[in-house]
View (cartoon, rainbow, N blue to C red):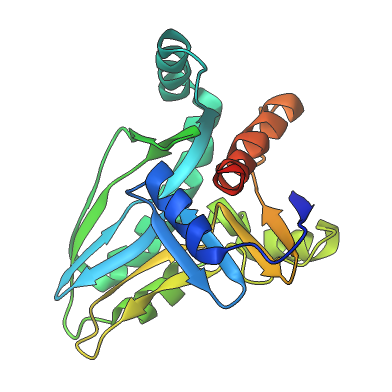
Length: 235
């Protein structure tokens, strides 16, 4: 889903970055070419032989009151639909990492990640790479796109995306990060972001559609994700 915004002049990217950082200080806040955003999702991190991932899938909008927020979090933790959606992503990452790792630990059950607008299911995955260890970018390329942004089974899902989505994604749901000369690095997925072009900005938001998905709930999820950038722009 996208939302096109029009301004009187080009938006102030520096101020927008500061607002995004203040709203979600633990997110990966970035400006890359014409893309700007604050993504919560780490794809992969490598430090020497240690590899870490933190896939997100399964989302619930935050509640308007503390009580409603606690209920939203608890409901997400108990949702069989969201756990099934999450499991597709965890399984794909585990399957990609296992042949490359001496050891691999996968958190079970998943935990909650809190952002300014939504709750996510998150699984912490930690491993020790076999020698010679692939560099961080090679690991990112092996994992991307996960089912969270590309669907599953991958080939059929990606073809469906090309056939059905009315707007080109461009860099949305692509990779943002770094790799150094030693092969260490950290890569995240470009989510909660927008494409700035002159006095316009196209915002992007997505939701995972699985058996049991409710159209109204998926729409509310994309509303909550779009609200991250909209709130930052309103400051």
